[in-house]
Length: 228
Image (cartoon, rainbow, N blue to C red; front, side, top):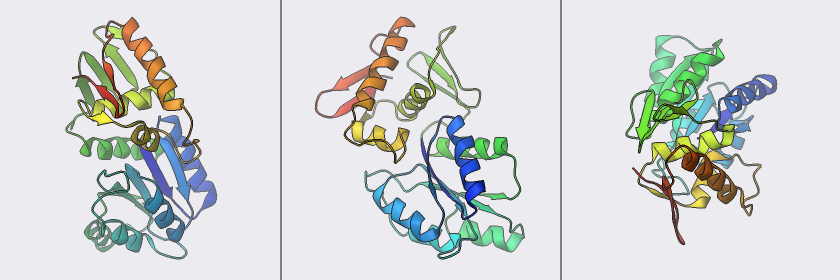
């Protein structure tokens, strides 16, 4: 999944981005509210980690503008919003949630809690509500970063895991390469690269070796589909 971190403290923003990337997410960073809104207009995101206190347009206004639209540029739903703030009063929490935030995390916080909240928000975008996702003979534990086919533990790279995670959150859907590129890779990826095809091919080989030779179908001219 793809995450936008909006935080004006540069060191904190970079530390959060690095920690989230290590958990397998694609992460972009914005240091101002205006920068965040520009990124949200040109790229689709699954989750936005949004600081409340920004130097130009504050987090509440960004959240309101974000939810003024109904769909993102790739046709997916608007991203979930995790509000990050040092304001811990009841009034502030209620105001943030009323403005459209899906969750609220008070600073200072521990990275494992942030990651757990991201996983929970990610599950809200799919039909899966628990920590364990099971599709077509595969069982994934996103918290422990494990995937099993039967009793066999798949050895996946970070990007292969992220790609399979996105497939498993959208089983049976035809996912265009552009959509996979938007949600599994960050803004630094070359949009004309063949990295999606290459990564899907590597993932297929590992699934085939584990006994699932036809788990991911190629739909000619449209994209890829995880068979349920």
